[in-house]
Length: 321
Ligand SMILES: Nc1nc2c(ncn2[C@@H]2O[C@H](COP(=O)(O)OP(=O)(O)OP(=O)(O)O)[C@@H](O)[C@H]2O)c(=O)[nH]1
Image (tube, rainbow, N blue to C red; front, side, top):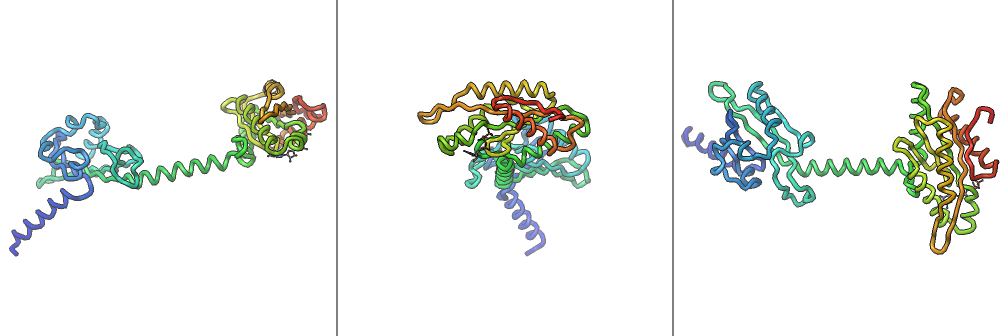
C-alpha cells in the first residue's frame, strides 16, 4: 500500500470514528458558525450535519446560555487553553433528552463539556472544538448517593417516635449554644418539660396510649417553637428546648403558654379522651452556669421544684435553688 493510500485510509477511519463515537463533537469558527456536527449530535438533537453546517450556534440554539458560554469560548480563543464545564457546575449545555434505561428517571442528559482550541497551520486559533460527554449515569448515582446520605444524616438526628431531635443531636446543639454564650455572652434559656404522672397513663391505658400521648405533646411543642429554637426528646416522657436570645422571664412566658395549651388539649384514642398536664423548669444562662451539663442540671432543679409544687406549673431557676 502506498503512503498516499495509507494516509487516505487513516483519514477515512478518523472521519468514521468522529461520526460514530459516543461523544458529541462540534467545531466552531471564530464567529461561532458550526463547521462540524457529528453523529452523536445528530442523534440527540435530531438535526443533521448537512442542515446545520455554516449556521450560527447561538442563532440555531437560542436556549443556550449564550453570554456565559461565549465568555468561556472567548477565553479559549484568547488564551489558547482548554476549558471544562462540569455537570456539577451546570447540568447540561445542550438540552438533550435522556434515553438511558438505568437512569431513566433523569429527564435530560447530564453533560461534561470540554472546549479545545484548534490551531490552523499558521498556529493561530481559528476554531474551537466542543466535546460533549454523556455523564448521566455518574451524575444520577452521585445525586442519589448524596440524597441517601442527607436522609441518613437527618435520620441519625431525629427521634423516631416524636420526630424531634434525639438526645445525642440535641446535646450537640446545647453545647454549641453554650459555646456562643461563653464566647460572646449570648443570652439564652433552657427548658425541661416532663409529663405529669405519666406512669399512671401507661399503667391505666397501656404503652400504646402512652406513646400517643408523647407524640401529642411533641406535636404541640413543635407548633410552639420559633425557627431558631431547638427541641429534643431527652428521655422517655421528658423534652428539652433551647431558646436562643431569650431571657428567663421570656422563657417562662413560653413555658406557661405551652403548659396551658397542653392542659386544655384533649388526646383521643379509639373511645378514650385523655387530658394531661406537664411541669416545666427553665434556666437562663448566666455567669453561674459553668458548662452545658451544669446548665441542664440547673434547669432540672427548677423542674424538680415544679413537681414538688404540685405539678402543672413552670419554675424559673434561681441560684439559691
Ligand atoms: N409509653 C411510653 N412510656 C414510656 C416511654 N419512655 C418512658 N416511659 C415511661 O414513663 C414513665 C415515667 O414515670 P416516672 O418517671 O415515674 O414519672 P411520672 O409518672 O411521669 O411522674 P412525675 O414525673 O413525677 O409526674 C415510666 O413508666 C416509663 O416506663 C415511651 O417511650 N413510651
